[in-house]
Structure formats: C-alpha cells, structure tokens
Length: 164
Image (tube, rainbow, N blue to C red):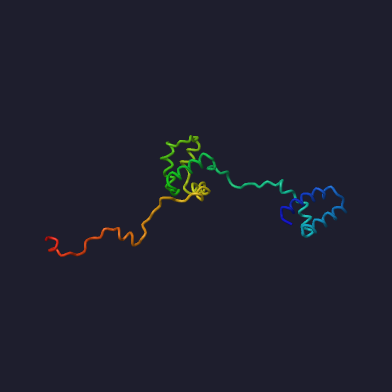
C-alpha cells in the first residue's frame, strides 16, 4: 500500500473512529493495523493526531524583497542582452541601463535595483541561469593551425644576398 493510499485510508478511519464506541474502536484499530502494517501504539498516535491538512507550514525569516516580477524581468533582460555577464559586472551596469529601460519601473523597484548586491542577483537569476549558456565565447587554443597563421620572421639570410 502506498503512502498516499495510507493517508487517505487514515482520514476515513479517523471519521469512523471518533464516532464509535469503545468496542468498535478496538475493531477499527485492529483493522487499521492489519491493513497498513503499523504497530498498535503508532496507529493510535496517528488516528488521534491532528489532521495534516489543518497544519500550515510557517515560513521562517523575513519576506523576500527582490521577488517582484518587474525586478526579475529587468535583471533577466539586462543579463541576456549583456551576453550573460557575471553578477558583479551586471550590478555596475544596472545604474547605466536603468534610465533607458523600456519597461516602466516603480520608484521603489528602482531603488531596490540600485541597492541590490551581486550575490542577491545570483540568487534571483539562479532559475534563469540554468536555461541559458554563453555564446560567442572564444579563447585561443594552442594548435598547429594557429602556428601556421602566425607571421614568422625571415630566417637568417646573409646581408650580401639581400643587397644584390
């Protein structure tokens, strides 16, 4: 039996369990232990515990202030148009590109963009960075083709031959 099926079964058992007499509860508990393969004490604890649907997971920490769609869209557009530059250079470019942006930004978002750190830019763009790879990146690699293209100085030729 899968875990999802066990949870559904637990919800149904719980409804029956709380509206029954003591003898019926023993039979329901025996049935639940047999079907799910749980220990009796563990089964009692599961049935008596509060429903997981009522529990709300509480997020810890302060709310994210750079999670606004306008900020993410601006950073993404700037990062892609600058050929996927690193976040330190991207931070320096924000103040230069901000006045000429096509999309209107609120004053609060402009201030946030000007105060954003390079590490935060990396965190905000982490999902976007997985999709894109650098293009146009070339480096010199050692090889025979490169050596042939280099202009070689003329070999030692006697001066006399050059004059005549």
